[in-house]
Image (cartoon, rainbow, N blue to C red):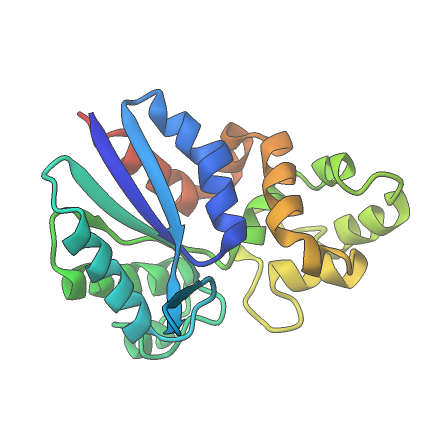
Length: 225
């Protein structure tokens, strides 16, 4: 049995891990805990969610690893590449790459070197969580009932894009921005809408469309081997 602690960027990813990814990995005897990234402390309160800087992410990763030192424990991240802070290790080198997968490879490799533990598996989502939802836009109907016109507009917006992981990181056309353009309520409903839509799409469909995400899940499935 392996315990897997996943440090996620926000509540949407935390719910996705707890409702969808965690139960799946449990069938491989990999038992998951997820918590949002710590962003600050004030008056004894801990604030979580959001990506402010690599230094804060590094501190939170190392803190959890110190708190849970078991040899049967592994750690991984689920951070968005979109708007990733520029102080992440390897960021400048990654900027010089034209292929998004190469960019991710450089940053993940440098992140792994910086944390420097066999228990740590670095992962960045190309380009953000909402990428996964573009694996099957039709499943948005399960949450946005009666929004056929807007959903058809969203589908037309990505005509010709076969690989949802390549939907870009431009502030106006990133995956979440495309959704919000046609379904503005999504911005305030991400933590509930995002995981519900993903659940209806199904993990296998998402994996078939998102190769970098699939590679990460495949690696996590093998942790107990």
